[in-house]
Image (tube, rainbow, N blue to C red):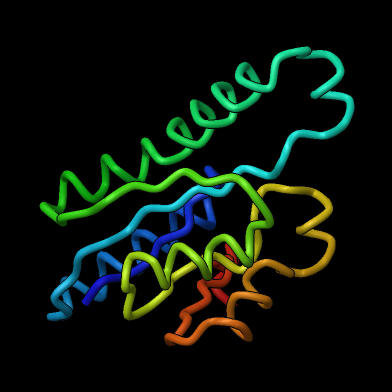
Length: 147
């Protein structure tokens, strides 16, 4: 089964990767697509950088950096995976990636690293849940008190 694992560098996105690995330990045949979506540059960033190629390069490097911890976990577990760093609206871009790579399942965290998006109670995961043509597993934060 090919699983899309959106990774934004947050601990919750890493917990989603660990959840997918637990499913594999339970017997699921698993290959993965690690995806990171960079939001488009702000007007301020475009004015300061003066060169759109610099913004694209920095964005791509940030995306690759965000995937490193997830790659290490998958390497350690011996899971085959592909990586995709894209730019755009996170939810719609993740749906596009899922379709383009032929994913059978999406496993993602309920909230990402963006403060605004966290305030919206997981708007990206909610939008992916409703727009995806394949099943979506949303991994919630672990309650530290175990309640």
